[in-house]
Amino acid sequence: MVHALDQQAAEYPLVSLFEISVTGLCNRKCPFCPRVDPKVYPNVNEYISPRLHTKIMRELGELSYQGLIVYSGYSEPLLHKELDRLAGEARQCCPRAKIEIYTNGDFLNVDLIQRLFQAGVSSMHVSLYDGPHQIEHFSEMRVEAKLTDQQLVLRERYLLDHDAGMHLSNRAGRIDFEQMNVKPLAEPLSRQCYLPFYMMMIDHTGEVFLCSHDWVKKFVVGDLGKQTIIEVWNGPRLREARKSLAAGDRRFGPCAKCDVDGTKIGGGHFGKWLRYYNRPL
Image (cartoon, rainbow, N blue to C red; front, top):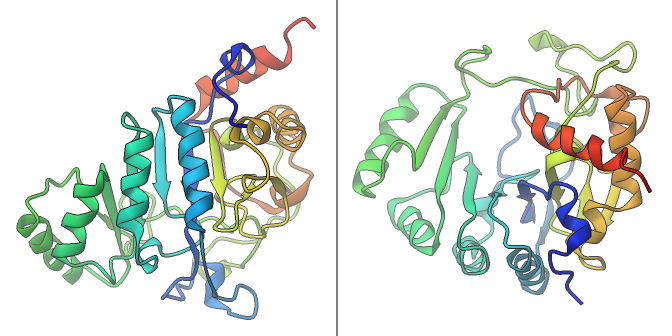
C-alpha cells in the first residue's frame, strides 16, 4: 500500500533530490572513480527492473513530488537502453518534477538526445573528461538538437580545479587520490553534513544508501523493493544517521572516512528536520 502525503509527512521535509543508479555498469575507468580498479569496484551487468522503477515513480507521484529526479549515481545511465522510457514514466508520474541526466556523453547522438527530451527530460549534463576538443563536438549536437546551453550542459571536468573543474572527494574513503592532492583522512571530520536531510540515493537493486558519496555501499538505509519511500525516508537508519551528523559526529559507516563538506546546500531541510526531531512528543 503506497503511503500518501499524510499529516506526519507534512511535519518534516520530503526528499528534494532523488538520485537513481539505473545500472551496475560504466564504460569508463576514470582515475578519480572507484571503478578504476575492477577488483575494488567491478562492473555488474544488471539494470533496475521495470516493475521497481514503476513502483518508485508512482509513489513519488502520490507524494506530489516536485523536486529533482536525477539519473546518475554509481553508473553511466545511458548504458540503460530504455532510459527514454524510464524518463517518460518519471515525467508522467511527476509532471512538476525536474528530471536530469548526468552522463559521460560517450553514447550520445542527436537522435538519442531528442528522444530523451521528448520523453520529458529537463536537462542533460555531459561531463567532458578528455579535453577542450569535446566542447565543439557536443556544442554541434546541441545546436542540431535545437537545445539551449541550459538544457544540454557541458561540464569541463578535465580541468582539475575548484573554479571550472570538478571537486574531487575520496568517495567515502573508497580510493586514494594522493596523486591529485586528495589524501585519506587521518581521523573522521568533526563537521555536520546535510546530504541525508534532503537526498535519497537509490541503487539499481532498490537499495537506498546514505548519500551519493557512499561508494562503499555498506550503510543501507532501506530497500524500495520492500518498503515505501516514506518508510525509508523517515525510517530508523536515516534518523540515526541524521542525528549523528547534526551533532557533527561522523564516526560511523562511510562518513568516518568521507572528506565531503556536506553543508554547501540543504540548510533549509536541515533546519526543519532539527525542529521535527526536537518537537514535543
